[in-house]
Image (cartoon, rainbow, N blue to C red; front, side, top):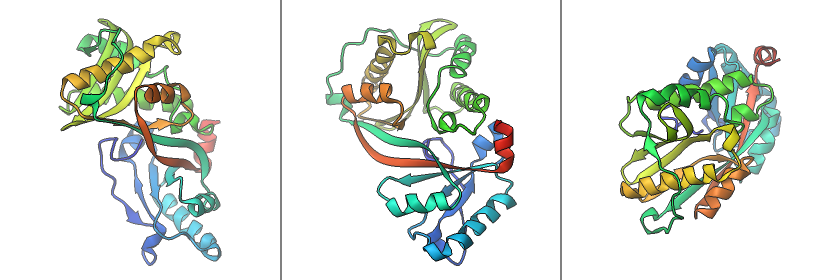
Length: 274
């Protein structure tokens, strides 16, 4: 999940003030609050670290991470930045995931399949059911893909995510659900900005995963957005989540912005995840 999509801005600072092209780093405040320890994001610069300077650069980066007591740092490298992909591992990062950006333009003109599921917006009585589902439905995403990260915290992050969306603090948030009141079988969190919808988080109960229920959830949400006059839908998806990629492809989404996702781990985090 990029920082723009997560709904908050990051306060980046240069890792090497005398070499601003080497990249920036920032604390991810929301994830840090959920996990109970500092989590950071490293943003690559325009310049690749020269091979002879990698040791010094790694020292400066790790110095920043240590000063800020960071236990985990993520970095998203565009897939076409091949030299940076080689350099990032030399800086202590490990591959965890590969992301794509699906987009559906011209939603008002798209002929969608018939919707076979009645969706409704979530109500207060649905929150326990939705929160429970968010804690057990997910297998993908960079935290779940990271074998050195505590999976209980990865699940907690999705629970906190959907609880925040259900809080009603942002009028752009909508949570659509299928199933009876208090017995949610699936949910989809979207945000709306003008004529664009960001499809942020979707889940169906594990027993219905791999069935038509998931497809019906996605189709139903697109029908709802079309009814609101939305013209463009976009999202982010792990390339490992082929089931969802196939659904997006069948619904006419195109794919762009491939990014390779890396994590840096402190020794303390490795002990925590053991």
